Image 1 (cartoon, one colour):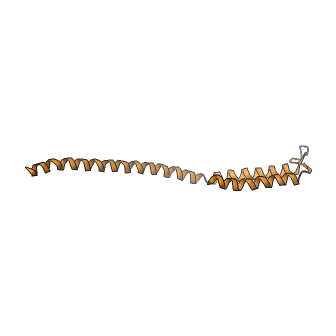
Image 2 (tube, rainbow, N blue to C red):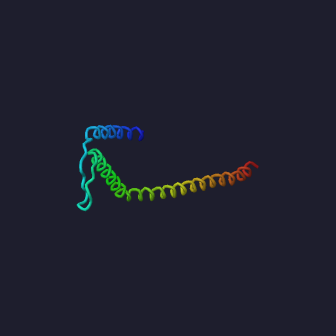
Image 3 (tube, rainbow, N blue to C red):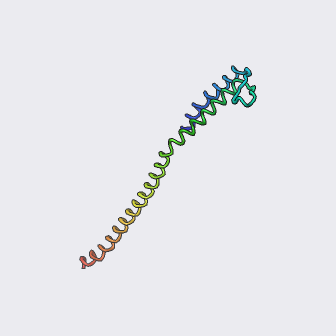
Length: 114
């Protein structure tokens, strides 16, 4: 299901990027520093490049901000494993007690019959 949602989000984004590139193919002069010469590039390259940089910054920010959530998830997984082990040990001990009780009750029943 996650794959379907991913495609629902990605396909319109790709279509929009292609349409933007087709509509904005004019050459512009881009100066990023007064000490370097200007770069001639198509307008869509600058637009899509800045969009990609913004996307990466947003992804990095989200990843960093969710670090505490990932740490808590790891901690909870460890607790769940520990509790599952305790539960399995308790169930095994309970089963052993039942078997011991059944074995101990059998001789008493045999004595009562005689």
